[in-house]
Amino acid sequence: MRVPVLEGVLPVERSRVPADALAGLTLAAVGIPEVLGYAKIAGMPLVTGLYTMLLPMAAFAVLGASRHLVVAADSATAAILAAALAGLATAGSPEYVRLAGLAALLTAGMLLAARLARLAFLANFLSRTVLVGFLTGVGIQVAAGQLPDMLGVHAAGQSTVPKLLHTVRALPHVHWADVAVSIGVIVIVMAARMITRRIPGALVAVIVAIAVSRAADLSRHGVAVIGSVPRGLPSLVLPAFGWHAAGALTGAAVSMFVVILAQSAATSRAYAAKYEEEFSEAADLTGLAAANAAAAFTGTFVVNGSPTKAQIVDGAGGRSQLSQLAAGAVVLVVLVVLTGPLAYLPVAALAAVVFLIAVELIDLAGMRRILAVRRHEFAVALVTTAAVVGLGVEYGIILAIVASIVDHLRHSYSPLNSILLKSPEGHWRAVPVEPGVRTAEGLVVYRFGTSLYYANAARLVQDVTALAAHGAPLRWLVLDWAAIGDVDYTASTILVRLIELLHQRHIRLMFSSVLGPVRQQLDRYGISADGYYDTPGHALDSFQARTTLPAQVGHGAGEHVLDQEPLRAPVAAQIVEEADDGDDVAPRVVRGAGHPLPPSGEALRDLGAHGQQVHPAVRHVGRRGPGAGAQPVDHP
Image: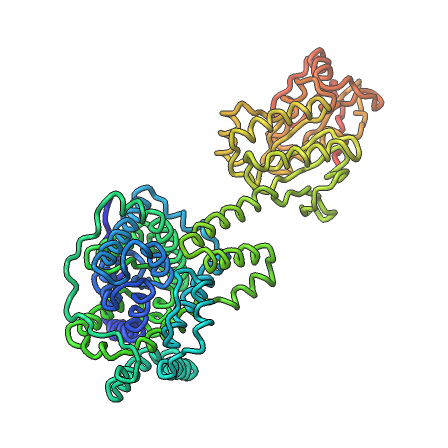
């Protein structure tokens, strides 16, 4: 396996380096308060949030492929981690940090395994609908969890609903100084957003809060502050290796793996499409695995591709991973020089920043759009949101995955099948499957809307049975395979039985538009139709040629001429092949004053008795008398 390096950086355009550096500075200004908040969500020491923007971010910049994806701490994975570690260790303790490292290492292993097994496609199985519901639930949960710190009260409980109830009961005991700090931070951030999103409102609010806290000595007035923050670079920290711990965290690691896979892949694809760039999902998986491994051994927690941070960089003019490397350099300076002032940061101020981040995750506009166009998908999103809020993030993501799969199965279980009709102008149009509908007299062209598998094969039988049992007599049923990309074993056995039932009714089953790999599948199953056609149009032409040929008498001494001009050579070959079967819907040829010959095989034997030879490529079947002027039989 070749490991690509610096695909997100090279080639470096010198003219763009200043813009990338400025975008990196902007990312650091906005990202530093955010990652401190994400560390708080995860229950980790605040400084570990800054660590996520050092080696993990640099590892992805070196080994990833996307030029735009920003990999650092993320609210969704932080919430999953906090839910998994609750009860295993005290939040913020050394043991808690080591367990968080193990969770990051497990996640890194899953990402690397997905890369080696080429499982990047799994990112597609978490639908946008479910992701909107999931992130909305995470936003509600995180926002509710910050209310006690914003109000200066204590609220017991780990899950969202009990904690929210305890917060409401504690309202008479709110600490107004903390409330004032929270309101001040919210006002500053919202005012900055109203002016322009390029102003790092959260950073401005944090700086103001630190300055006010230090000048007014808010800690002496009962306002809680975060306390001292370690200065310097992260040190090597070994994860909490052990089978028991690994078993306890595997479920959370799977949940984080799925979220990382879906969120990072969607973000990378979006920006690659925007700038018409090539990128490798496999290389991104390598970069994400390396980033989480770096997090595991540097005392921090799981990192993820962040769509909001990618938007920050893009809006500031960044077009490569140089922006992320520049942001890491700024964070490095902060860790070495500027951690001292963070000790004065009020807890309420940080809680307000996190609260605003969480509110942005609540995608009410997205939920409304889904409701307006797809009510059943809105129900899926709503159930996912309720599961995250009521059961917790870890169970919520499991339900989100199940909901995505169920939604997919619902579509394939009940496909939009149709009957193909030809307009007077010669264009095909699809109409719903209804008993009695015919493409032509005696013919139905039926298109199945998706791949055939065990769950939807019964729908094929129902439709075909209804078409055969109602309406005018059916002689041919053409099954169009244009939308069928796979046939599983169960469906193949049902298809064999269906062919037998149609033959019992003297109905011939033809296949059209069969893809090559699907035809090979059918051959392996031993399934053979009565005829194969490249398109439904070829099947219709063939059917009309053999069932609607008007009889005309040739001039001369008893000549019999059947002109096959409208039929292509493969169709003529099919006619000869099917006529040998002795079926009563095989083509008839004319003799004398329009009297038909016996059908099918008898007709060909009679032709053979007159010394005629039939070849797939011939255009005229019959024999000419000496000096006779032959007249073709015209097709409609």
